[in-house]
Image (cartoon, rainbow, N blue to C red; front, side):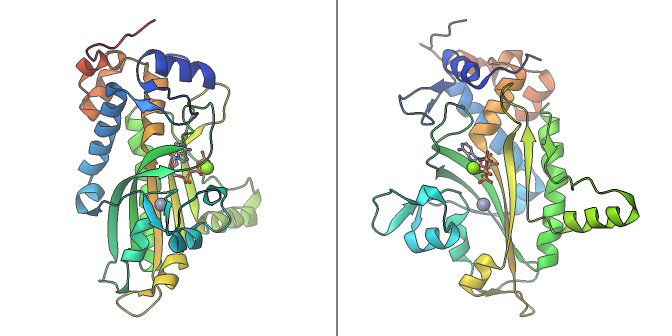
Length: 287
Ligand code: ATP
Ligand code: ZN
Ligand code: MG
């Protein structure tokens, strides 16, 4: 396995291998053929899972009504400075899904999945921090206990999935270091309250591990706004789980090398990677 590079060196190697195509605007790269192939194969792997097969698929343009966006992201800085009258670019792929939920839910709630472009005004030299990128998201709506169980399932599943791809994945749900018997109870209740977790992987030598996958439990934030209730009349909750697809691809290239043909055979097999895509006609790959 190659050693991790600094943020700048990682950017330069991704560009040299034609994986990202600098545009002059930080965080706004074009994507080369092998890079897109990895994104497409990772997404296909996720969609082959039971969850992927069961979830209801939806596709939206990367824009939502301004009222919805401001309600969902009050106070976040991406909202400012966009000169759009009635629509706003979405910071997360799940935003357009919540307004589609209304009224009484079926027993067992619903699970929706979307793949969408997101926009965030956070220009950076880190190749993992883009101004526009894609997320594969799963959105769960249902009874609080169902949503909580779904969170726990994804926490395991997310780590197992990334580890199966040879990534050094850790979740950030570790509780604070309490000691003793009462401490263990405190730690447990802290864990149980967890509304957000991330799955992190080391990608750059000079940066903390990068979040590839994030889970957010919104409780009644959206269901309250859109009047969504469970089949039994009790308040419903929502939560979402998103994979940053460009970050996933970059983590794989940083970990396994910039040429698909150098990747471990097990990783290529799991993703069904076509290593011939390494050398698109006309690409100049300098070493
Ligand atoms: P970070 O702490 O790195 O800023 P975040 O907490 O903002 O991440 P979320 O808002 O939970 O991340 O977004 C969900 C997922 O989208 C993240 O797990 C990550 O994979 C991806 N993501 C977030 N911001 C970016 C970005 N600027 N460029 C590329 N991918 C991103
Ligand atoms: Zn989301
Ligand atoms: Mg962020």
